Picture 1: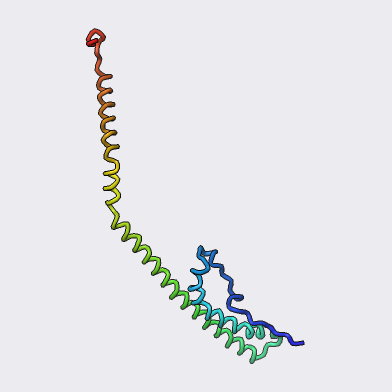
Picture 2 (picture 1 turned 90 degrees about the vertical axis):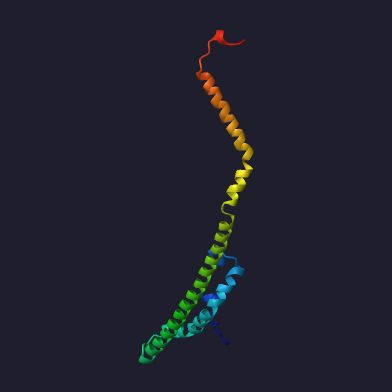
Length: 153
């Protein structure tokens, strides 16, 4: 009977759900695509790692193999860091670009909304002023003491 061991895939090594970060799966594909080559390299190194860590007897040859494998992992890690740096810079620039559009729109409409609300509330302000004048007149009349015999009726 022949047994085969499957190599882990890049997806099996790292499980990250786009929805955990507020992204749709389709939005995350571009980011995943940037990291897949490094994850594939890690998957390729998995058999070597398992063989070295399963070794019961340490020999100079095993120690040298561990060093060589560690250096390969270092290259993968630093390669991943470079991909991270470039991808993050790209998306940060995209965020600033989106902010620029929002700020341009806000600047373009600045003052226009205030002017329009001033026009919109024109008759309300006239009515408020009329009511204020009536209340003021009523207050003045109530302060004025008029005797009953001075009333015209």
